Image (cartoon, rainbow, N blue to C red; front, side, top):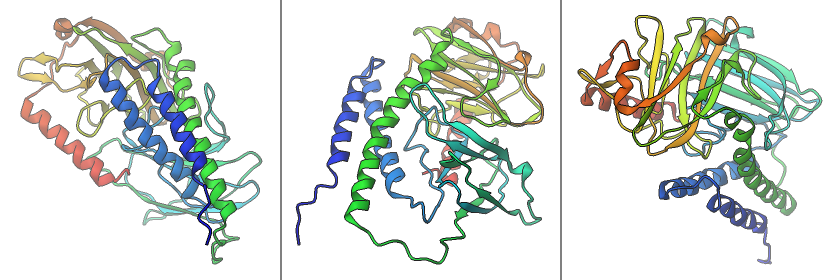
Length: 386
């Protein structure tokens, strides 16, 4: 038996190219940045292998490519992402059981994300358009239209502690009951080549993407609510990026929206990914945040916890050592469109002046904050994002 096959060479070469991209990223300023880059690279390799090997167009299934160990595209800490690859003209059946999460949405995309561009959305809807039985089960059929390549499902949690995920799968009726095609050298070679292209392409894409969107805005500002690039019809977002000195903090003020099931804020790193949302409070939903008596939510972005009488503020967003990074607010499952008055305002202040912008103090003690972090850890584990 010959042992001369070198099927992994394209992937090995791609990993070397990807490492060069990571090592020479222009925004690396600290050792932490560099180490996070290599952690990011591991997630990109993992995603590339999953994209190439964990699917078969003849036997479709939902894969979970984005989670706490494989972050990309300023991933939402509150979302479970599922992708299934499609073939034009083929009929698919999607079945499941609705959980109790705030939002369950479906989107058919044509193409993939690239530097500075989002794929075209062919169709987008949420479970309000499904016929859901009393026991929570549902089924719908979809024939992939010209150009359709991917069905993306997002299941979004507003309350991490109480909401439960559902069950979901996809089938091709015309291939059900057939055995998988035998493994061949050609199929393996193609998959390693797909993984190689996916790895380098994804890093190049997410290096460039925010500069066409987030970084088009002046620093320390957020946009009014707007349609998310490549996003859903029932979703709006506000985007921006921050830069803070050692003794500065940023205060985000936004009305609590009662006309949507889900509203949240997060900060991310210059790698355009979420920062540690499991053991740090780097994101908050409206269910997790404190809303002041005037209907406003006030978040403080800083490295140190801002103190108020009785402890530190409840709506603190930790920068976890990042002086610069991305910011994003999301509203999903909207019942009306949003205007500028629904969006956030932002102010940078000296750290010691934070309290001047907080007319209503919502303190938490160190013990209460530790309990919050413990609850986040349990919730992430329970969702099993990986």
